[in-house]
Structures are given as C-alpha cells and as structure tokens.
Length: 429
Image 1 (cartoon, one colour):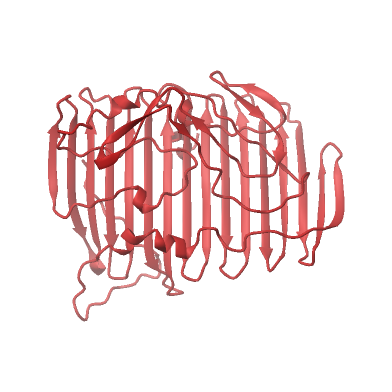
Image 2 (tube, rainbow, N blue to C red):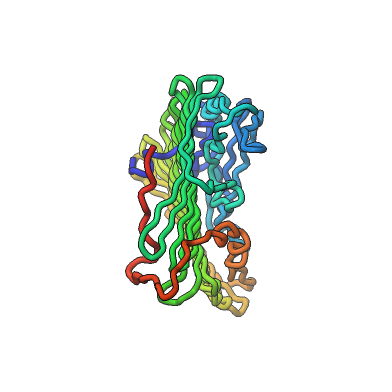
C-alpha cells in the first residue's frame, strides 16, 4: 500500500467500503456488500456502531457516552444538482459491515472525572465522509501563559499539558498548546495540539492535530487547518481549509484515509476536492473528486471512483462536467474488469448547446449504443453552495488572531516564491 494507504483506516465499525460493479453479493467475512446498479449519483456511505459505546465530546470538556451510536455519514460533499438521463451512467452504492473497532472505546477515556485537574481529552476517532469541520466545532482555547505541567489521576492514568510561543522574522508568531495522556498500563494514549500563527503580511493560521490508540491496537490521526492570507499577485484575500483523517484497525486488515481541501477568494473563485482510500480485509477502494468555480460562471466538476479485490476483480465509475453560460458537456464511464482480463464498459456523453437542445450519445462493449438530440433543459450549479461569504462567517476565530505589534517604519519582506510561511518546530513531548 502507498504511504497514505498504510495510515488508512478504522476497523469494521468505523469502516465502510465502496464496492460496485455487477449485481451480486460479495461475502467479506463479517458482513456483506451488496452491489447494485443505479443512476449516476454521488456515493452515500453509512457506518453503524451497533451495540458499541463510543466516546464523544461532552459538556465542560468531559466525554459523554453514547450507546447504540449510529453515524450516518453524509453523501459526499461533492454534490451536484443536475437532472440526468436515466440510462446515461451508473454508480455503485456501498454498504458497511459491522466491526469491533469502537467497541471498547470507553476504556480509552478514564480521565473524565469531576475531580480531575488535568486536561480532559477532546479526542475521539474521526468519522468518515464528514468533510472539513468549522472552527467552532473544535473548541480551540489557547492558553495565555506558558504552562508545563503533568499529573496522575486516581485510576493511575497520567496526563500532561504544555503551552508556549515561538517567534521569527517578519513578525512571525506561533502560539501553541499541547496536551495528552496515557492509561495506567500505557496500552492506550491520546494527544492533542492546537496552534495559531500570524505575521505582519496578514497571514493567519489556526490548526489542530489529534491522535490516539487503544488497548486493542486501533489507532487514528486527524489534522485540521484554516489559513487566511493575501494572494501576492492578485492582492485578494484568500481562505484555505484542509483536513486529513486516517484510522487503522488493530485486529484486522482494515483502515481508511481521507484528505479534504477547500480554497476561496474574495471574488468568488472556489476550489474543493477530496482524495479517499480504504481497505477492508480483501477489498480496497479509492475515490477522488474536485470542483472548480472561477467566480464568473464557469464550472468544472469531476469524480473518479474505483475498487478491487485481492482476487484481481476491479470496477469503477467516473464522470466530468464543464459548463459556462448554459453551454457545456458531461461525459463518463462505468467499467468492470474480471480476473481473466475480460473488460466491460459503458461510456456516455452529453452536449448542451444552451438553446434547449441536448445531444446524448454512448456505447458499451456489449453492443449498446445511442445517439440522439432531445429537447431538455440544462441544470448545473454555477456557484458553490458554500462560498466566500459562508467561510468568512464561519472563521471568526481565525480573523481574531492577533499578530505581534509592528514597529513604526518596519515593513514585512514578501517572498513571491511561496504563498505561506514555513512551519516552525513546535517542541516535541
């Protein structure tokens, strides 16, 4: 597996696997995946933690227990509202088998007692297909003084908390807080780090990194970042958000990885995308998608999804659409390859002329074909459903970051070769 893949994924409870292709049922040991053929749409994934107790963020920093939790992961945020020809393409929805991954997570959080003076963990395994969280969901609360403390709880678990500040050229400032803890036997551990960065160019950054492992060997890592800066060439303000999530089961060959990104500027230009990977025992899957809006009405969207089994069977689906001023095109392919190298595929396309006429065409390796011009309205999203005004409204903490005071007559040096300052080294534990 690639490096990103090795860091992938939760066990069966927190893991879902995209599997598509021909109509059939595939046994995967602890469940099954039913492969259905439907009209073209974005994958929806569900994860059901039946009978398990999963820690979630609670009031006053404590962790509440939620029994029979059901995580209904949203459809991929790469949604598009387009009326589509019924026979133009297909995709494969993915069902999710059950797992033991989060079954003993309550053992991972013994620190949450009213008398515990140490930091309470806000950590829990990340959830799949939840995109990029808003800053208020993280509860970042930077300490105003330097702290270096540690302690032991009544149950023998240990904790630590540190905070500090680094500085550099151009008024660079980084305030950070780190905290973590271990169970009494060292079998489970959690870490969490917050930071905010700024300099005299107007650059501001807010970030979080969380990681953990439990006694069963399950492990996870989640990072989140939000950046405000001024583009050196256009002088436009830009906000960039990103999230990386990964988890791995300690009891089975299962894991997943997701990398999400969003970029916005003050004139409406928007770029969004995600790269996902997962594995559940003998089956693996990948998904990539992207959206680009130029702020003047031009739109590009695309998706590419594929999966394979250890036996060599592969299947996938992809599509792309481009539009401007009511004129554009869509095209895609659904395919399946067997162990014997036999390959089936169906390709399709649409040309939208902007006058109520649409040219539809396609063919398959089994002899299907169509080529026609029909009267049909054209539907597409010329603007993102979440854009510049939305992200500004959800980034109040980012905007409130205070840089170091700038002396009169001192101006920052602007490096046109890079868009953001380099990361400083936050002290390790």
